[in-house]
Length: 121
Ligand SMILES: [Zn+2]
Ligand SMILES: [Zn+2]
Image (tube, rainbow, N blue to C red):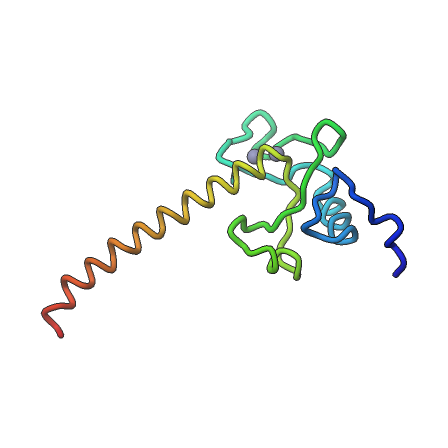
């Protein structure tokens, strides 16, 4: 429990998850980006999965598998994935876009319900 001494800022490890969580997620990922297209790229050259390995040139980040999950969810046992910076940014962007699209769809639906529900009420 005295890992404080080694808890200095590490550019390889974003502060969003603890060192142990980060390490176990990385080991599970095989120290390789786990993106299988959620960033929007097909990664066809690397059999559908991003081929970026963890390293000084491409430090991987550990993030919630669901890019829309809250930070709290991400650090409290949600599914975690190792992602390279490019895929992490891409996945976030895609998720944000999807959420916006979702909200837009939902608004349309509400309008629709409003119109059709008017008669019933
Ligand atoms: Zn990647
Ligand atoms: Zn990717």
